Length: 442
Ligand SMILES: *Cc1c(COP(=O)(O)O)cnc(C)c1O
Image (tube, rainbow, N blue to C red):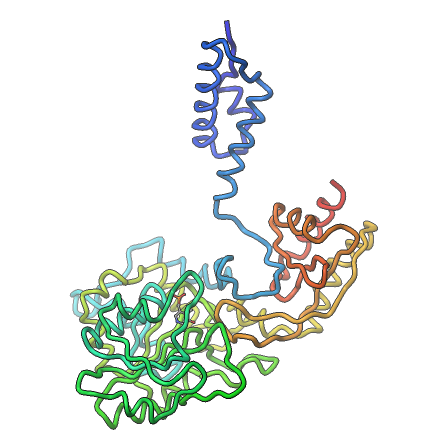
């Protein structure tokens, strides 16, 4: 009689794990081993079966959405979910999610209301934006704008701005899919106002500018400011649209936003339409935010596609609370902003908390000054100061893997493994120190 472990025993042994997956794996393995046994082949004993279940379960654990400590120094990291939402914003937004709401209901008249009106009102308070619309992400915003205004019509874009954002979002391909006809102008390094003027024909609908979010062109270069493009579009009866990618609201420290287009300046200059991501520098939830004139936004609102791209109450509640935090200048509620703006002195204080625990436990390390990027398609190529803990002695690739498997993602620089404190939350400092102790003492 062949005996395999009973389900109860397996459940007990893997009590901490997600039971349905443990049961599925166990059945599969036991079934396989039983078949081997029947055929007279060599099969696994109980402890080998437990090991096999553990190994298989690792794959499930690897997929599970879990918290990580981001020690790469990159505050807006697309792989790690871009902007983090603060507990306060979550709490404020969460209140409405436990109940029925007036998401699409006008309580004054007792009829259907519009889900975007409150967000639009808040954006008008923050930016003086005439009107606003929110879609799933900025890629959807670009798609909706082009589909609404450029179907079978030409959209003029500089060759220096035909960008690819991570995850294979390519402006030329989005255009084709939206039904717009791409009219490329200028060259990779230089585009002039004259190029826009020359490109305009009876089939032109829109002049578009795309922000160089994740790359820079230097040397013999030139491009046209949005307000000039905007003026030209108005003179010729066309629409002007700026995909700014990552919108910032107030200037950031370290001169980071010195040459960046500012949302409020663009609107003041009369740009007809702009769009940006909700979870890059804006520091909120994933969304595509479109701001612009009432006339154009109302056309976007009428496009049937909006129904496919629309956001739910979770997104709208989180976004509303983030906009309100901006209006009230409560930057501490927007982790992306407070982390980027954190002074070097405060980063050093955070480093000291961890360094103290490591020293007490005789772990060797050094504290070093470093430079990092904002990331996530924001402020390309611009670095700003940070402070890191570096570990020597052990091969950096080995350390990187050990930390990664313990939920801490660092980076390798100059043959050393670094934990960059620019992107580490204060609340995680003790947890991080304990993980380091575990890693070095295992
Ligand atoms: C990031 C980015 C996008 C895509 O935005 P998502 O919110 O990631 O969909 C589009 N255009 C530009 C210029 C960007 O930087």
